[in-house]
Image (cartoon, rainbow, N blue to C red; front, top):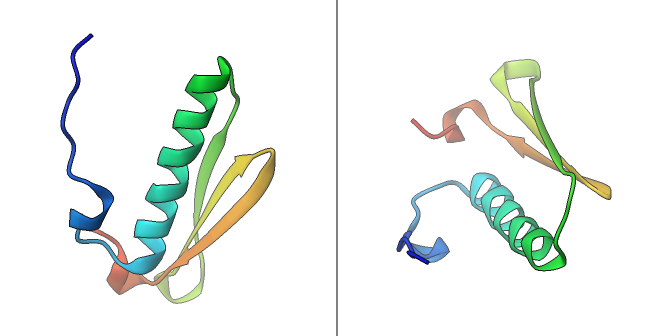
Length: 73
């Protein structure tokens, strides 16, 4: 099996909410693979002032509010 070396979480240059969301998604994905099956969903809505509401549903919902200026380019 080939492994790809992605930058460790600490090396990514994202705002705190984006970084937190990516860390959660990575954790959930690894847990799901270890378990053998999973069903997750990720949605994003645009709120007032361009704010993004990212919702990760994985048994329970996790919500992240990302300001427009923090949206990665």
